[in-house]
Image 1 (cartoon, rainbow, N blue to C red):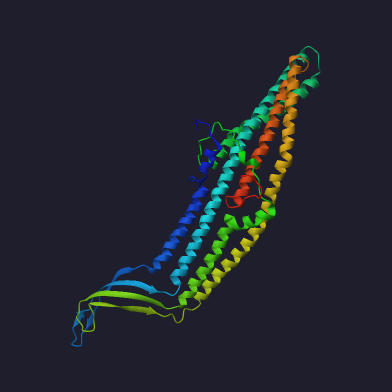
Image 2: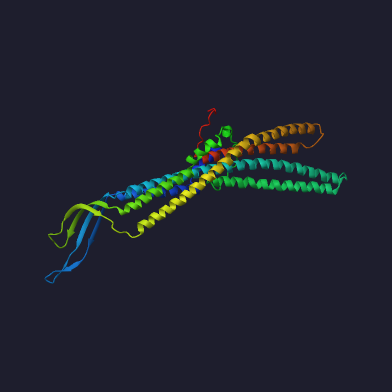
Length: 404
């Protein structure tokens, strides 16, 4: 990427052709195909059937008795088979749509997290690079002082060990520059197209009000896409059970036949039309077995839904507590650290100019670390709010008394 990448541009890739997104879309396409298949039960059908055979006449001669027919048939009534199968397919589509929406939300959160990882890796590398430069200068100066007998060998070795430790951290930071960019490129489904430079996002929504836990929980349990998917699946099972039970009911079709015969007979019609009905009398255990299978799926879905609601309640509380902690404690602590580091940097700069101390480089690096801590708070807060919106189905309810 030649141009700078923005967070909005990265998030636009959430609906791109990523493997996770393609799997969810394929599941939706399968559900839509099943719906078309269920609806096709009521379609008009046209087919040809016939037979080639020979029969012996009373006089002893063998004659051909071939039959060819064109049959047109249209189902009229199946007493719930088709309508319930279509209703079940519609619920499956709704479940797959909710699952696709959930995948898109998860992809947005993943892209956002990978984007922030790159920004933090850049800042950490800058700070570690500054620390390494300071440690190297201290070690280099110590070697010179050792050469003239001002310090001992152990002092030089201590400073060299400190330099090697900082150098190791800086090397790890350098490697994270590549690895975080690769993970971001993969999250955006752009393998091999690593972003060179990212734009710092404003994150203006980090201070927006959020509802209290007690008022938000019912909203989440209603709007969460995974809850909606499981509820749709349960309704789909009910419709399938009704469709299977309807297989014990009669079926009524309209039929028109045009036929040709190699042997003429007064009992054979060239053209005929009528109603064809089928009344099931005995089907063995097939219907009961299929119903039992669907009811087992329903019971499992009910258990999964109950467990999901418990997990959502815990996740919601943890997310709201994280937001409260980041806003109420982490932000003030990071701001105070920046304020102190700015003061310490100005003091170090003044002492450096007066040649009283040489700790300016260390103060600059520590200031960068404080700024990194502050940005990390905002990144974590943005991710927590994004997770909160994903739990709530993409939008939060209005907060009473909050300004628009």
